[in-house]
Amino acid sequence: MVVAAAGYIGWSLLVPLSPRGQKFVLLRPGYSTRRIAGELKAAGVIRSQSAFVLWHYFHHKRSLKAGEYLFESSGNEIAVHRRLVRGDIYVHSVVIPEGYTVFDIANAIQEAGLGSRQDFLRVAQSETSLIADLAPEAHSLEGYLFPNTYQFTRTQSMEEMLSAMVKQFRQVAQQIGLSSNLQRTVTMASIIEKETAVPEERPIVASVYYNRLGKNIALDADPSVIYAELLNGNYQGTLHHGDLQVNSPYNTYRHAGLPPGPIGNPGRSSLEAAMHPAQTDYYYFVSDGDGHHRFAHDLEEHNRNVAAYRRAIREQNR
Image 1 (spheres, rainbow, N blue to C red):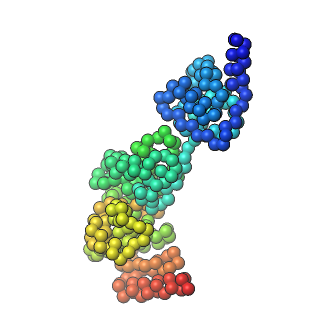
Image 2: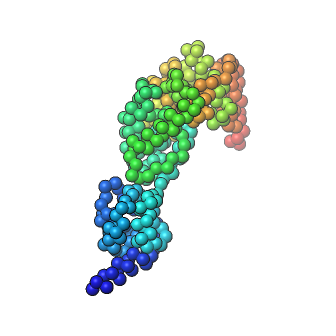
Image 3: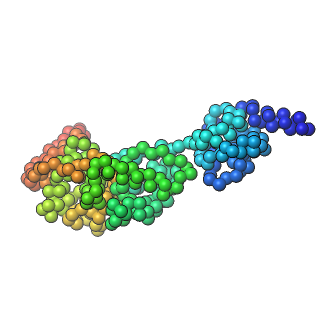
């Protein structure tokens, strides 16, 4: 019986086992060795729970790392044990493009299988202490979740993921010398980010808005109205004329000055444009229908540019 038991344990440990397809196994912090072996056995990654536990007993100086593991190729139990000792965990890439709002990021987190959209938004709105020293009046972390590609694991909390994004913002802010009037600058940068994807236009767009602020002219920024509708849960993907009347401090058609906070998360180029706007006497701009914008000094010139834009759209639709 002893020989048979030893043979079975040796067979279980040494003979490779091929999982059926991709197998994800989530091992949370605090799991016992027996619990870990049970999870692996249930997933079809190892043959014998007892053999795995016994092997670990003789190698107990090597702790098993918590995390999510992906098994998709054959391997024996000793190889599996080594992976858990190394902490060869599976990470989820989350791409946050420039201009994403907290709502967009929440969707990306949920789609990556890292948690629910609602949980992300709840923490993003409540954990303002992460940025309180730089933006004490911030109502949420909107604007301070820096666009980047992040590697997260399923054992990380929402607080840890948001903290990583804020940490990246802090690093970039320090690199570009962003310190004074930080919240105002980030709010302006978030509008610039939404208005143009052309980096060389951003300082000019910034000049338009600063010029309007200087004359106490309403910014009339469509992206701010979209954000107001997002906050209300009413945005349907298209901005209509009636939306311009929404009663929100983020509606820059109804309220002069900047909105009370950022309307998205700007990238480095937009932050720098908000810090160093071009010196112009432009007060208006409109799309040229080809990915760029036409800028105007006065309303008459702007109206001509709008007419040219409409003609370009009609030509494209023919």
